[in-house]
Image (cartoon, rainbow, N blue to C red; front, side):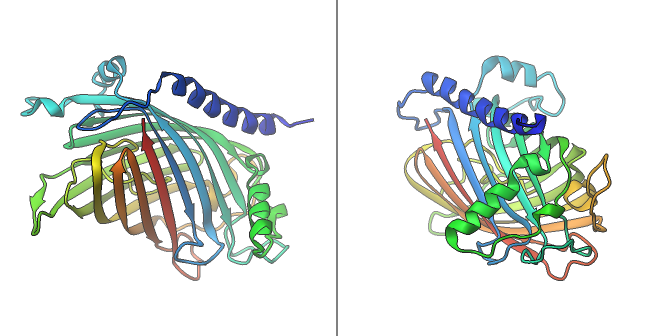
Length: 347
């Protein structure tokens, strides 16, 4: 018989698939260019095999996200809240507030450095998985400001199916089989609320038709999975930056917009950025909240550096980001780096 958390895991997947099927009936394949805003799907895959060639710490993450086109009643509702409310005396009608909803399904996997060891490694991170459903609202005011609020609800522990996913993946590619999953965190309901705001400075001209811009951001989260405050900045360089606020990523990370404006033909930009987080809670280091479990002493401040490229053709957007993360706990031997591949399509 399935456990409650196992049934919850299956229901999360079923809910997202149902949402996509329902939305697909309303989505048409009409061209979406020149400022038109359509529904879209984002698929994000992050793994430390990219760049690092390792299996440790945050070792794998995958997320599928569906984002609606701007919805008038959602926009009217968002305008009543201070973290979304529109700027006063807007100079351009294109800068009006536009709000969308999103739903996502994701899974993150965490392991210690030595996955061939069967016994508990006391000075390294616990084995852990995080399977979650995300429900969000994102709003932009042209390319001047971007806000997003997202609630993640899911399960940490065996019911996240992280052990099964990693083991099958390693078997498929003949990679070292992880042997320490019996030491993973216990099942626990996870709830976390994220908020992020990004502001975009005016685009500046460079040479040969290239431009650059700066996007500072602030944000934070509260919950038993993650609680932190953060700030950072992203720099972008390319021929046309008036499409998005940067590519999306799996949290915790620098923010990016799940939506973008399609453009007929080819477009690209490169980017780099940095973020500092004040970490108050990280269940994947602190261990279970309500049960005794393995844990390590986390560092209170964590930093990310990232660099990457975005390529867009018509309604398709592809991004790759390399992330360099500072040490997250006291006995950590090395910093961590991993890659993030994103594919988006707008209908």
